[in-house]
Image 1 (cartoon, rainbow over the protein chains, first blue to last red):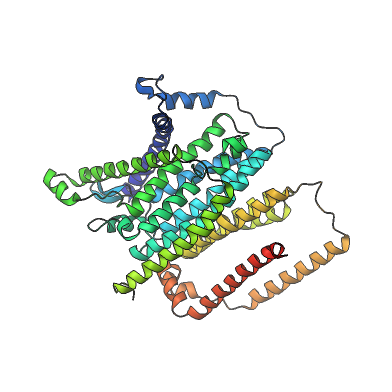
Image 2 (cartoon, rainbow over the protein chains, first blue to last red):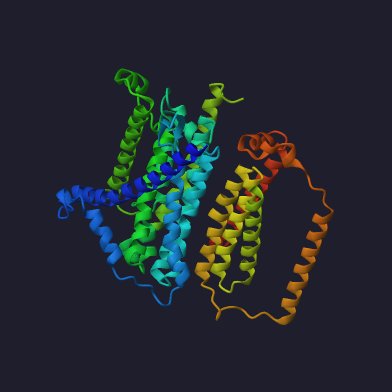
Length: 347
Length: 165
C-alpha cells in the first residue's frame, strides 16, 4: 500500500512539472509557429534557436511591477488568476498517460486516478474554468475587463452544451465513462475517431471555444477589448492567466487524444513491442512517447488555426454554437443510436 | 475518517450558506453559494452517489451560478444602488421565512429516514442510476423532462414577445 502512495505522489509531481514544462515551451512554440506562418524568424536571441526564451519571459513576468488597481476588489482580483490556474491543473489527473508500469514489484496504470465518472469529471472541471476569468474580469473594475468576462461566460456555457452532447455519443459507443477504459478499449480495435467522426469535429470546435483560442478568442480580443478580462493584470498574475490557457491547451489535447485517437496506443503496437523485445516499462514508455507525439500535433493544430483564421463576430459565434453545433450534436447522437441498434449493440 | 470528512463538509456547507445571507456584496454571496454547492457535492460523494455529485457541480456550480454571476455583473449592484425596503416588508419576509423553516423542520422531524443507501450502496453509481431512471421510473423521468422542455419553450416565447409587435 505504501508503494502505491509513493507511485501516485511521484506521478502527480511529474504530471505537474510536465504540464508546466509543456505550457512553457508552448509559448515558445506559439511564437515560432506564428513566425513561420507570417514568414518571420521568431525568437532567436536567448540561447540557441531562442530556446531559453520561455525562461527569459518567465523572469520578466516575475520581475515586473505588480499593479493592483485601487478601485478593484482586491481579494477577488487575486483569486481570479489563482482559480484559472487551479482549474487548469485539475483535469490532468484523469488522463491515462500510458499503459502498465512495474514499480517496486507491483503493477500500476500510468494514471493518477481512474474514476468511473471520469468523463463527467472532465466536463465539470471545464465548466468551472470560467470562474477564474469571470471573477478576474469583474474584480478589475474596468469596462473592457467586464465585457471580456461576460463574453467568456456566455461563450463557455453555449459551447459546453454541444460538447456534452458530443461526449454522450462517445459514451454510447464506448459504454464506459472511465478514461482509462476508453483508452484501453482502443488497444486492439480502431480508434474512436472511426466511429465518431462528427462527434470528434464537434468536440474539437467546442474545445477551441472553451479554451478561448482564436477564432473564438472573443473574451480577450485585443483589437476590441484591449486585452479583455486580463486588461488590468500585470506581472505574474497576467502570467498565470496566460499560462493557464497553455496548460488547458495541453490537457485538452491529451483528452482529445484519449477520447478519439487511441491515447497511448498505436498501430501494431503488440507486434512492434514483441519484435523489439521490450519490457513492460519500456513498452509503456514507447506508448507514452507516441501519446505525447499525438498531443504535440494537436497543440500545433491549435496554433495553426489561431494564426490562420480570423476571429468570429460575436453573433456569428453564438449562431454557430446554438444553431449549428447543438443540432448537429443531437443528430450525431441519433445516428449513433440507430447504427448501434442496427448492429444489435443495444439491449 | 469518513466521519471527520462529514463534519468538515457540514461545517463548510453551513458556514458558507450563512455567508451567502450575510455578505453585503452580491458577488461574494454567489461565490459563497458556489462553495456551498461544492460542500453538498462532497456529501453526495460520501453517500457513494458519484453521478449526482458531478452533475450537481456541472449544473449548479458550472452553469446556473455562472448565469447568476453574469446577471449580477451586468446589474453592478452596490451599496448606493441597494433598494431600501419598508419595515413591514422586512417583517413579512422574516415571518414567511420562519414559517417555511417551521414546516421543513416539522416535516423532516416526522419523516421516516429511508435506508436506501444502506440497502443498496451501489445505487448512486452511474450505470445503476441509469437503469433505474430509464426502467422503473421511466415515466416520471420523461414527464419531468417534458416539464423542463415546456419551461424552456416558455422562456423563449417570453423573450421573443417584443420582436413580434
